[in-house]
Amino acid sequence: MSTYTVNVSNIAPTTTEDHLRDFFTFCGKITSIELNATESKSATVHFEKPSAAKTALMLNGGTLDGAQLTVTSETVHADEEHEEPATEGHIGQEHKPRAGIVAEYIAKGYTLSDQVLERAIQMDNEKGISKRFLAYFNSLDQTLGAKALGENQTISGKVQSAVNAAHQQARTVDEQKGISKSATEYYTKALSSPFGQKVRQFYTTTSKQVFDIHEEARRIADQHKASATAASAPTAPGSAAGGISGGPATSDPTAPATTAV
Image (cartoon, rainbow, N blue to C red):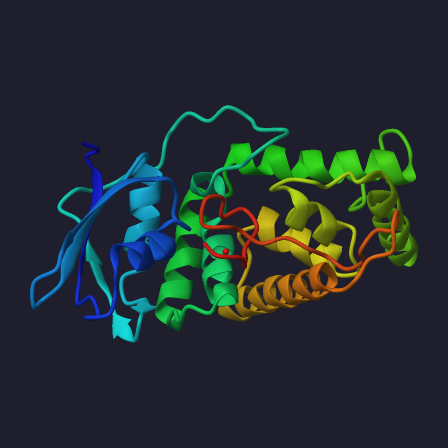
């Protein structure tokens, strides 16, 4: 059994193990949950990595099913010291900026106090953005830039006067070639959107405020709605749906707004 655990109390009577799993899966991979379904419900959530447990502790005071959770631990959990750069494929929740994780929570409809958001910002300031996530995010920027604009080009590297044209060109190329087809979809398409510079700054710097988290949460939620609308609309054979899609699923919280940022 994993020693990377948190204790959760003040759980609502209607909260099930699945509800807890959906709530804490944003923090990282869960290995098991022990739910004590007595009159005063409590639970122990076991994570695969210590950084996930540390993120879960950040959520002390978050609201689930109308109850304000108390999240504690007898252990001081630390972030992993050694990280291998990730330049492609899946990026785990454990490696994302904490501000990005809480933005995913808000986009999903969970209620987090400003104190929780400030805690996330403080953790990013103290730890910095993980090298693994930065390598992953920069790789998306370079891949999309090279395909849309030419070799050794990045979307973020365009001068401001040309950035909107670059975003539109990148989006068109993405739709035609299907560049983003996985968990990277939200970030890739966000980078190629008119607000791509804001998205990049939010995820790659520690200079942010509570307002910035709410702004990113709105972008995630709006894009998920656009994606859902496009998915439900009839599509002509051979055509690509527009808009920016993405959002983390319960099994893969990389795309922040499906069942699961």
